View: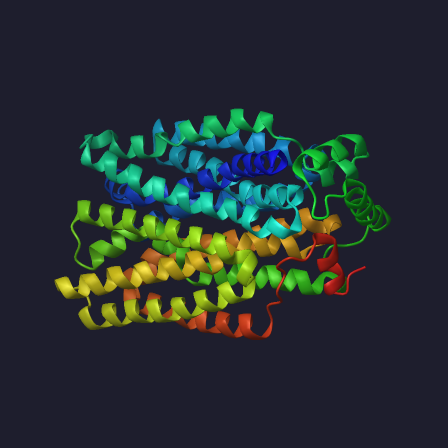
Length: 451
């Protein structure tokens, strides 16, 4: 029981990187109108302002792999906590558009790094039987962070702080960032990383405290050592080779489909979407908070069943929900155009709520669990980085182009495109996605024919 409590506590702390990830992702949604007015942004520069953090996430996801392997998972998480804090304070005190872009970029580096390291760390300290639920804590905290950002934006908006309102929306992130930094010092290092560095005694002690699948620490150490032995023998082996084609292709596809649903565009521009559908400004903020609450509820539901139903079934349910909700939103915008009735606004709200529920129960809960599972230990950091890089470069492209496409072609076309992409995802899940639930990490590589 003690080991379970310690394991859960360590996973929760590591998953705070996800909470800051979610908060940083959603908080800008409440500031876009103020920034557009203050800096006289066009739809293109507005999109770039939103995407500036995402450019940082791309680099963060790519660059974090080697430091994570060299210095350890926990040490890198501590550095990312500092980045989050500096970004929040810097955005709150930004003196011009360029300084805002820089601090948003710095926060993006932290988000990209956390999207790789947090789930990796949790996967490496967790027994296989509960790994899905524990890694899903990172996703739970992402959606909790999104909800907190929407609620924070709404509360600050009701305080009518005037020109400094958007600064407070950014600045409050400094508080959870500081908490993340200090709590990490009580977490142990990943036992798999320690064994890879020859620090087996420390790893054995941590595994004893955290627990293993068969309650046999010696056997667990032996399995990890065999995996590490292969890693050392193949240390100069290229990552992009035929041997790793299956996990690489799976990681790239699930990451691409995640963003081709339009999830980040909707999160970043949620108040704008509701305003397009006829909602007043403060009402749009409140509806955004409702989206965050839906996200949280269905993520919790997915966490409860991900190790029971498996990753594939959740993806199937989510794909169908995507198609229905995005199709309904597209139809509403096609029918009403820019002249929404109250009924039209309710249809859009209902469609977006269903969309968020589908995402939270499917892609949102599965993506980081799945990517953290499918790569062998020797290339897991690089594989996680590839998945995160793909995810974030697609997020930047989708978020940057959303306001431009919506302005020039109409919002209905945007939602229709996302719906078609989710139809392709459904086929991919049905015919190409494998199930990984309950399989030890060292066994998954054998399932893919990797020795």
